[in-house]
Length: 80
Image (cartoon, rainbow, N blue to C red; front, side):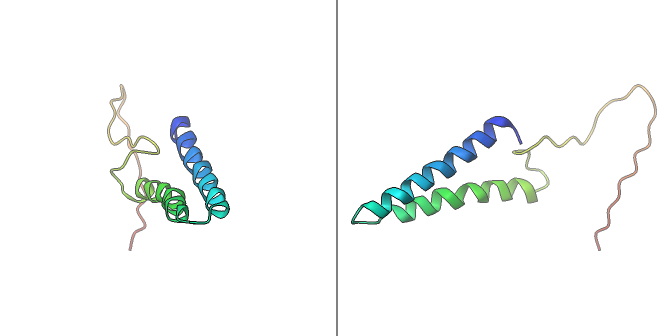
């Protein structure tokens, strides 16, 4: 995960916590919805990039590269 992505996710969590604390002090308490969406919404983005093979938001996926020598790569796929 890149540093900018981590900082952005961490900042979203901090803002969500600040909104939740503010919601406790306000009589309306409507900020709970926004705080919950912000806190858990960024987790959906992370889960998407973890489970979708073509998503490259957290790290680069290399599928091809050129070498100067002939190489043989063994990949293990234990899916049933």
